[in-house]
Length: 267
View (cartoon, rainbow, N blue to C red):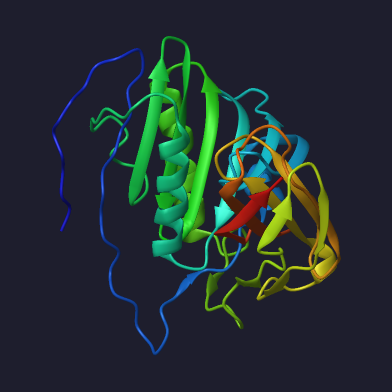
């Protein structure tokens, strides 16, 4: 059953939000997407990757700058993430939306895409974020909204039907951050060595871990899983006291986990 909300607020852009529920899975464990093979996805779309940035400061997935070539719409940036569950995908999308400076409006313009979708549009371009089960896809475009919708529908269809792009099953181990390894108390303008503990991502040398300031666009630490990372405590951004941080871990198949935690910042 789908539930549609009709409240509309008007500003320079439009945000679309429609919520749906997935059909129940068959078997002992729910089937989920276990990866997104971005090279296969972009090849099927006729898009060339110019640069893979890894996890960006918004911590919503892995970022790719692309050249969309001769497509009717000029898509120039993608963010992909495969979450351990649909609930985890919704949590990450919700945090990302809260960080967006302009509040949402609601419409049905992109209602044919995904289970849950948000779209910002303005004259000549926009940005779309949509969920398909436990996957989140975001892209920025220049061009007509109708052409962006066509591209989004093609991506959504490929995810649902092409298992060389989006394998589906169960994770051998549910991806998770078992421990951040971050000390509970850190002095301002200092560094601390941390060793995160993660599982379910495969090869640790192909798994990236980053620590962000949850309230500021600051990357405090980054490196490979199961390596010692140096975390640099912010000097002037926060007063002493409790500070929220965000650790993310992601692998080459765009499997992505985020964990919020707090530290005590002292002088």
